[in-house]
Image (cartoon, rainbow over all chains, first blue to last red; front, side, top):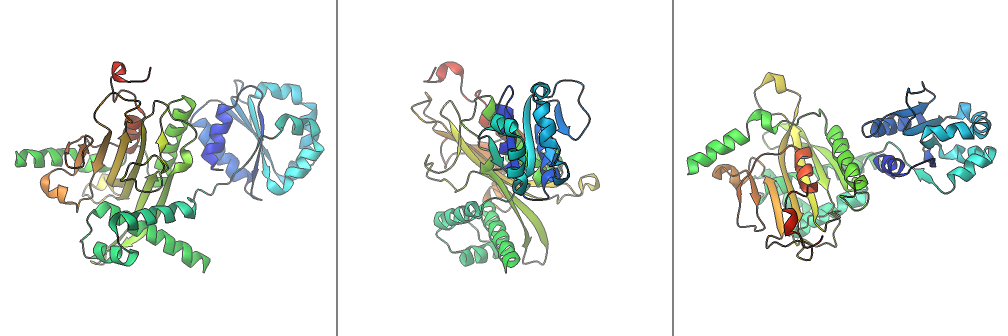
Length: 182
Length: 199
C-alpha cells in the first residue's frame, strides 16, 4: 500500500485504534520518517517512539520497532496498555520478518491490533501496469506505434506535442527499467 | 483582436507564472497533490482513497539539436480518456462529478538567474465531467489546458485556455499552479448550489 494511503488510514481511524505496519527489512526508520512527515503535514501533534513526548496528547503515535528493541518492547507494551490509550491512534512499524515474534510475545497488543495490518515501503514508483496502460491508450488514441511516435516527436510533427512528450517520457522510463533489469 | 490575445498570452505565461511555486522537486509536488486528495477523502468530497491514482515518471529527453533535459509527467488517472468513459480510472466526487488530469514539468528555461534550478510547467490538462443525472446544466464537461510551447495554439495566442464542454470551442484562461487547479476540480463552486439536481 502507498505510504500516503497508510497515513490516510491512520487519520481516518479514531479513538484507540491500533495498527501494525510491516515494511521491508531495514526500512523501519525510513518509513517512520516519511510517515511522520505525511501525518505532520495534516495533523498535530504526532509522536514517534523513540522520541520526546509532545506537550499535547498526540493524534497519532508511531512506535518504531527495530530488531534491537524487539526483545523487551512487547513486554513493556503489555504493561503500559492503559497509558497508551492517551496516545491517540497507534501504529507499530516493524520489519515483516519480525511481525510474528512481536505479536506472539505481546498477545494483548495483538488482540488490540486485530486484523489492522498494513504493508508499505518508501518505494513510490507507479505500478508498471499503469505505465503500460497509459502507453497503450496513447498508441490507441493516435493509432501509432512507439517507433512512429518517436519519429513524429523527433521531427516536430506531433499532433499534440504535450501528449507526445509524455509518450517519450513513459518510453524513456520503460527503457530505464529494462536496463535496470537486464 | 489577434494582437490583444498575444499580449494576454504573454502576460499570462510570463516567466514567473510558469515556475512551480512552493515546491522545488516533482516529488514534493506529488506529495502536495496527494495530501490535498487525502483531505478531500476525509472531508467526504472524494469517494474513497484516490492517492495511488496520482503518479509520476521522469526521463531524460534528448532532442535532435543535441540538448537534453529531464522531464516529469505527473498523471492523475491511468489511461487517456477521450471517450469520457466512467469505466476508466478517475477521481470520483461525492456529488457525482469526476475528473482526471496530467501535468508536465521541466527545468526552468527563462533568463532570470533567481529562478535557475526551478521547475516550470510545460503543459497540463485538467478535465472535470458533470453527469446529467447529477447536474442541471447542458455543459457536460470542462477542461483547462496549457498546451506545449510547440502546439499550434502558441501561434494563436491561446496556449492557456479552457473548453466549455466542446473540443472546438476554447477561450483564454488564467494559468493555474497544480494545487490551484486541483482545488478547482475539488471545488463545489463550479456550479451554483440551487442548480444541482441532487440535494
